[in-house]
Image 1: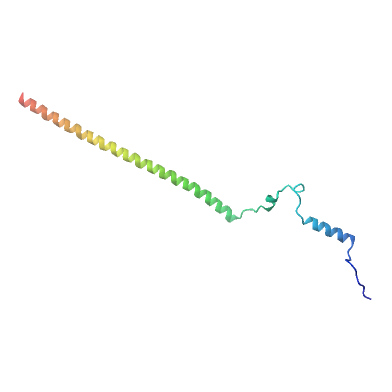
Image 2 (image 1 turned 135 degrees about the horizontal axis):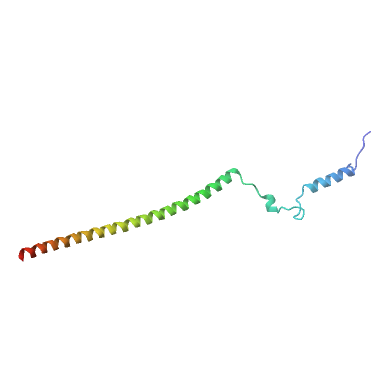
Length: 115
């Protein structure tokens, strides 16, 4: 003998279990959970992303060091140019002093010979 069932044939325990199962799958409100939706959806960075961030940080540090070294290099070149000018002025002064000394010696010799 076959029976025809009208409507769902479930027990009250099954209905209770089904309602709990559905409620367990829903997102809890902020009162029930300490995490915000953003925190809940936040993704932990991959190892590759961490390496990329580290590379970018080191690259930025190196760019700053390069810029500082270029500035230092320019300042050193300016210092060299200033020192070259000072040396040139000293040589000119030395040559002028030597010429003046030679002129005085010549004048002295002339005075001695004439006197």
